[in-house]
Amino acid sequence: MLDDANTSAISIYDTRSGRERPFSPAHPGRVGIYVCGVTPYAPPHVGHARPLVIWDVIRTHLERRGYLVTLVQNFTDVDDKLIERAARDGVAVSDLAARHSAQYLALMERLLVRPPDIMPRATEHVPDIIELVSRLLEGEHAYTSHGDVYFQVASAPDYGLLPRRDAEAMKVGARLDPNPDKRDPRDFALWKRQVPGEPSWPSPFGGGRPGWHVECSAMAHRYLGTEIDLHGGGLDLVFPHHENERVQSEAGYGVRPHVGFWVHNGLVTTDGTKMSKSLENGADLASLLDRFGGPVVRGFLLSAHYRSPLEFSIEALSEHARAYERIKRLYLATRDAAPPARDLPGEAGQRVMTFPDQLLRALDRDFNTARAFAELFEMVRAANALISGASSLPSRDRENARGFARRNLAVADAALGLFVRTEGEERSAVPEEVEALVEARRLARRRHDFAEADRLREQIVAYGYQVEDTPDGSVARPLGGPRG
RNA sequence: GGCGACGUAGCCAAGUGGUAAGGCAGGGGUCUGCAAAACCCCGAUUCCCCGGUUCGAAUCCGGGCGUCGCCUCCA
Image 1 (cartoon, chains in turn orange, green):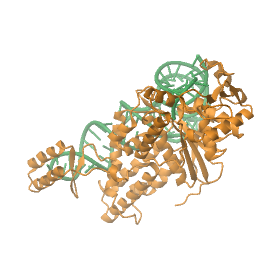
Image 2 (cartoon, chains in turn cyan, yellow):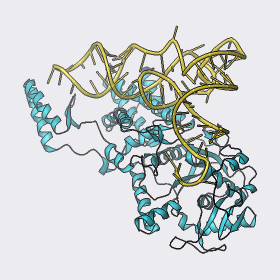
Image 3 (cartoon, rainbow, N blue to C red):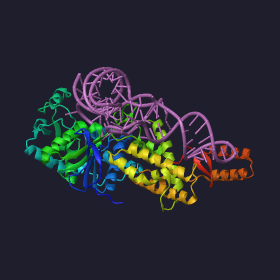
Image 4 (cartoon, protein in one colour):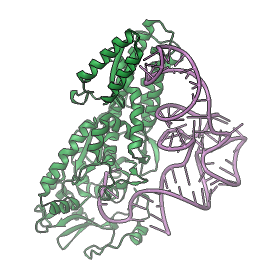
């Protein structure tokens, strides 16, 4: 099934215009995406996982619709926070950044996220940053002040466009910056002068390091050119980060607009408030992955539309784990099914056969993963009804339904990333002792000694397993349902 | 204080003008030695409140109330 990229009906919500618009890239058939990554100074929490998973789905869907996608996601590996933390812990900034970047990549893999095409680091693009700052100085969009370089906000007449805020009001409303080196409180640092003990690089405007915001403009330009089709990040980056990035890119590279669609994801909250590293109320991503497995955490993050706020709790995650179990069970039950050979009867049959199209259509509409899951669950119910349940279908049709289910789950897996394929994460084998108890119980049931059978079941439960009797025999599963 | 977003069943959550998806929890049934799983049936005469536009509004407009976010650390 081939899709013509030019006729696909993808629409995307754009923060700048405040509405959903039909998507079309600057260059037909190709999409350049820049997503703001992290400043690797602390272990990630669930909130950091959201954009990772969302952009994995977006990227994959655009590819599925025929686009050639380039996804760039950066590491801002030199920054105030990093410097403070490194000083506090008595380690080198580069070591701290390297350690947390590596951990971030490992967690990304556990979330079943494909690595972005390019993952640039700010420290490896200092020449690009210097070049941009030089251009801004030449164009008089920036000025130097005691070794610092500031962007002159007054030179961007439309400042406030992205956050849709009044530029003058921002001047008044801005927190008073005690920095007398700035001409305007809204001005922001492009280059920070060298401070002993801090990382620094030589530059035409003196030794120092990049300010926050420039690195993204420079790296996006380096890998994607002057027109970025999709630019993403958390909603909390809209201002100041993305707005500053926008004005400096447009002023420095002379393109406007330099971004087609600004795509911002809603924030993950706990107890009704935003999760953040500084507040330390974030649930540690690594421990959640240990407890629930990649697919469940991933599915939870996709269970709401990406722009909605998402309230995190162990209960919410557990609830999603139970929902996921329905999908996983069908997956396990149809793994060995042969490909579908002919049409399925009835309404349920229609539902099952048309699923791939329904799923893709849901994603066309601003990557509506919540709706995609609804389609998935409806398909699962219809497939189960055909395969087992009250189905009166002949076995040939049932087998065919299994084939369609397998195909559908493969499609859903490709689009949403539902199932782990690596050995290490697969469900661990049932211990021998438990297998022995299952066998003993089978014998007890065969001689109709149900009291003994029930006693053995209790023993199996004591091992943390639950036994299920199916037409194909009895199987033990870990309590809490299938994992990963 | 300014700007923005959101407010849908017990809980989570789709739905942007045509008469309320899906999931979890709960109740009843089928199947089963009993369970589990699966399937079937049951839930908002109604979408925070009040007005307005319209033949028709959860959806558009105005005004309240509430929650959250941003206003130079932030995914």
